[in-house]
Image (cartoon, rainbow, N blue to C red; front, side, top):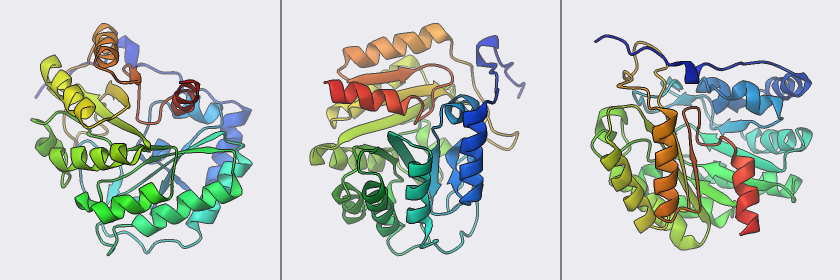
Amino acid sequence: MERVRKPEWLKINIGANERYTETKRIVESHCLHTICSSGRCPNMGECWGKGTATFMIGGDICTRSCKFCNTLTGKPLPLDPGEPAHVAESVSLMKLSHAVVTSVDRDDLPDLGAAHWAKTIREIRRQNPETTIEVLIPDFQGRRELVEQVIEAQPDIISHNMETVRRISPLVRSAARYDTSLEVLHQIAESGITTKSGIMVGLGETPQEVEELMDDLRRIGCHILTIGQYLQPSHKHYPVAEYITPAQFAAYKKTGLDKGFTQVESAPLVRSSYHAEKQILAMKKR
């Protein structure tokens, strides 16, 4: 298959400043994992330059092998019991007003990492009572009692990514299921916690399929949606079908807001936690 050429609007300036250097130092000195580097996020320069980073707990090896993801796949190491405290300390050192945490999938653990998640959220809250907390969680295989552990820890926003439209989901997600993800988000929304999801476009989906996904999310009560361009991490990953134009991203944003999402971030370089600190501010103003 002939590779689709990357358009001008996807070219970024990495850049670096003192805040970037300090963020990098804190992450490395605490032996922390971030999805920023593991996922080769195109916004790492911008976010780290503002002192924001998305912490990745549970190690850096995932038990799943999704065709869009650059995170390492294999047999993970045992959980680090000191990780919740290290993450909380780093939030304090970075002086974060809003902390974002995600994780690899830990299908190897009896509770799939749920207790570790809850401990991390509570430790961040204990050390940083003024900091708002957003978590991007796995599906926990749809086990409601495990999702409930995260809900009971009371983060301010719980996000779980749909990743793509229903038709393409089984082609690129190694274990997660479209309807399971919807059920997880429904459980979160029913708890009263602000609910968020994200998708990639450029995998071959149609605008109609994206709108159907939006309808599914609104039906179960999802509040916030992020939409960004899929970028193929390597030649081994799922190929990019097309690069979506900025005009189409703007159209998706308008459609999403018209359908009732309180916030929609939709642009080529948008990722799940991009501008998360602005989203929490907007949420507080409502």
